[in-house]
Structure formats: C-alpha cells, structure tokens
Length: 383
Image (cartoon, rainbow, N blue to C red):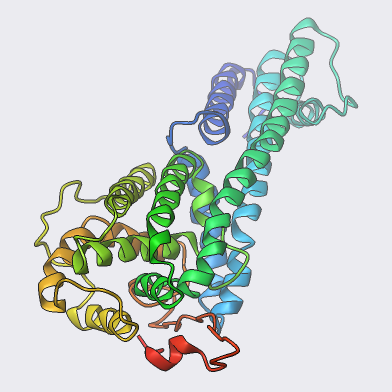
C-alpha cells in the first residue's frame, strides 16, 4: 500500500489521535491516577509479556533460590519496557498526525516525530502546524520520562516501608514465616506481653500495603531482598498467629489480634479487587478451607511443646480457627501463587514450583546456661 496516497491522510489523523489518546490513558492510569484502575495495555505488556517471560524461564530452573533471583528482575524490567512502549506508541501516534497534517512521506513524519519526542531537534518542518505538533510531541516525551522518574521514589518508598516489618518478622517467625512460629518465639523468650503491640504494628502495615499495592500494582511483584522472605507469606503468617491466639486462648487474646485480622483480610480484598481477582466477600465461618486439621495440629503441637497457654483443646479451637482463616486463606494463597512466594508451611501450593516446600529457618535461642537451642529442644522443627 502506498502511504503517500492522499486519501490516507485523514484516516491517519484519526488513527494517530486515537493512538496518542490510548497511550496517554495508559500512562495516566499507571503512573498518575491513585485509584487502582488498571490499564489493560500496561497489564498486557508488563504482567503478561514481560513477567510472563521471566516466569517461563524461571520454571525451568532447578532451585528456588535461582528462580527468586531471576524473578526479582522482572518488575524493574517491566517498568523500563512500559517506558519504551509509551515512547514508541507516542512516536507512532505523532508520526501519523504529522503525516496527515504535513505534506511529507510517512518515513519523514516518523523521523520528525522521533526527533521531537526525544527533544533532539535534528528534523523539523517550518510550517505552523508542524511546529505546533513538534512542541506538543516534545512536551509529551519530557512529561512521560519525568512521570516515570517521579514514580520510582514513590514505589521504592512504599517498598521500603513494606520490607521493614517483613525483615523484622524473620527473628520472630523464621523464614519463610509460619504463623505458629510467631506465637512460639514469643512464648520461648517470654515476650507474650509484646504481642498486642506487634499486632497493632501489623494492622497499620496491612493498611499501608493495601493502599499502596492496590494503587501501584507493580509493587505486588516486587520481591524481598532475601529469597525466603515475602510480604504475602509474612502477612499470612501474622494473620494465622492472630487467628490461632483467638482460637486457642480467647480470654487472653488481645483486641489488637481481632483488629489485625479485620484489616488483613480487608486489605487482601482491596488488592485482589484491583487485580480483578474474584473472591467471596462474605464467606461463612463453616465454609471449607484448604489447610487440613492435621496441619493445624502440627502448629498446635509446636505451641504446646513450648507451654503456650491454651484454654481450648485443638478439637475445640479448630472450628474457631477455620472461622477466621476462611476470610483470608483463598486470597492469600492466590497472591502467594501469583507472586511465586517462597513455599513455606501453611501457604498453599505453587503452580510454578512443582510441589516444593521449604522448611522455615528458625533463629537459634542459645544462652550461656543452655548452649543448645531451647526452641529445638522443646519443640519439633518439622511442620
């Protein structure tokens, strides 16, 4: 087809304006509008193509550590790919507009659009219409790059806030984090009185993560610096510890545990909604869960071996624990699978990891009087 044909000029203008509008909408939804409204174009390029490509390669690696190292590069590469995509589409759109307005070939129009978008200025046309489009294209290129540069500090500030408590959790829950281990470590070192403050801090953390990750969805895929730490696994472990406390020892369980659970599953629903994940907004307490009673007993045995106070027997506590976990288990499992989080106990299966499970690495508790790890002596390590 000969693009120099006159009858193609007006359709080129319409298509060019449409491409510019769609690209600007994608840019605004991704970098500017804090409403968790995903751009289909950004999702397709960033999540489906780029991260999907990283996942395709990661599935063929043998160790989880190697998979984690590769997947950690996925979100930054996706952001750079999005920048290249926006600049390329804007260049194409302005080239079509140039072709429609200025009497030049499409190749010359593309060259001038690229020159203007990148503010190089080596290709210009002196007509009034072309000059106006040159200025508009140059401003668009500058704004696009500036928005991404301004976007990065917001992302990394939210990432750093998220990772602070996730890192602190390793000394309380091992890595990968495990809900019963949180209560076990507090019981082991005599810090049960600190649990109300612990739950309160994680309630605020859950609210912050819900707001930031629902609005800036690329944060969902940003991985922790340590391969066995994960924000999804950490949140699930903390919610499980609160649910265990309320189920086993409801009289002494702090109010903060209940508040954390409410904020935790509300935050998970906010994030799931922004990612277009279907979920039941009002499950019944007796609905089935994937965690088995045998796995529950394993966690209770860990607590019982350390003398954690329990008002209820495991049989009595199980329905209450289920009633809490049914609110967040499915969404937490889906997010753990979606982000390829470390497959620790009580975190569900990973469709990309072929049944792998990593045993939590627990910090040793040694003293001059008892050089052996007291936690390992009194409670089993398995799960």
